[in-house]
Image 1 (cartoon, protein in one colour):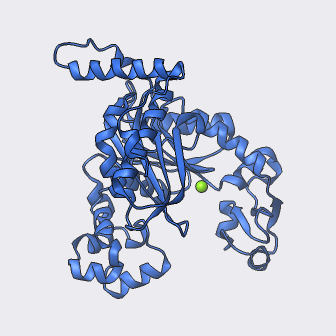
Image 2 (spheres, protein in one colour):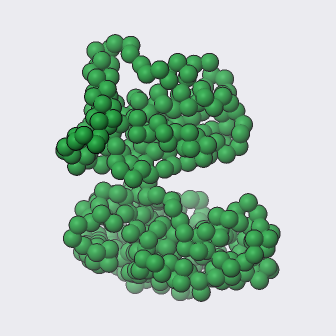
Image 3 (cartoon, helix red, strand yellow):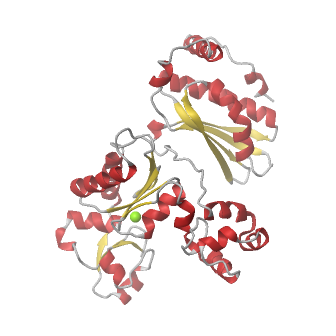
Length: 383
Ligand SMILES: [Mg+2]
């Protein structure tokens, strides 16, 4: 189960915590981006102030609006403290912005997701004076919509298995990727609710959403397999990228490069006595557009040989436009402790794995002595 966190009126609320005179006032934070309201209290929103709105316009609709100049350093410090409280419940935290994120609570031993949500809201209120909205669901999509539906101070759980019913009556504009334009197009085709989108014919949906039609239908049915990616904190990921002297479009050579990258990254993972669960390939084309594709393994690993078989489909998934590439990168996230795995007795059923572990260890030792020993695929990485 995944929880989505979204702090309520974050910048404005931080200002109210620091200055009690601002509490309960029609107040907004501006001055972070030239002339734009960055965050408004719910009192100000009730008077027609929203974000992003030009400050001049906000003062027109609400002349007594109190404007506070924003201070990003202060907000970043509150954000760090807020996510530190989240990490007391799980290390699997993905920050998507300064005041929003997802975390995976499936693995919690003693608390159910709703109990985690209740405790976290109380902790953040006590320690920081902030209210947050939490949504709990079986995937990112459901948790995010559940959190946003009843802001502020929301705590909404959508029980496993009821994702589709939960979404069905909502307006289709709640679905990811539906902005103002797309929402108009959906309505023009008679697709008003999420149920309408889920049940639309393939032809109508294609007319409404083009190439996005199938992905949109999956979301409308409550399906979402995007993993929680623990990648915002540099200490909690391992990554490497290679910018090519000349663009490459040879798949075999790219796979050789990726394998070599996996070798180097896993040596670092083992040196830190960690394991990883998610691998992501990013490609960049000569025009600097990028595509990525990630995959989460069933079990955490610290062996490059567990990642090799995934590399072809990771590359296929990321390399959407079959144009030559100027850069490729590999990143490992969802970093965790490998303890439970290495403590497993290496019984007769797993000789290949123990051999791979010995080989990996040997390679690490030889590399530590600067012996130029590489795996065979390094040869394929060359032109
Ligand atoms: Mg927010």
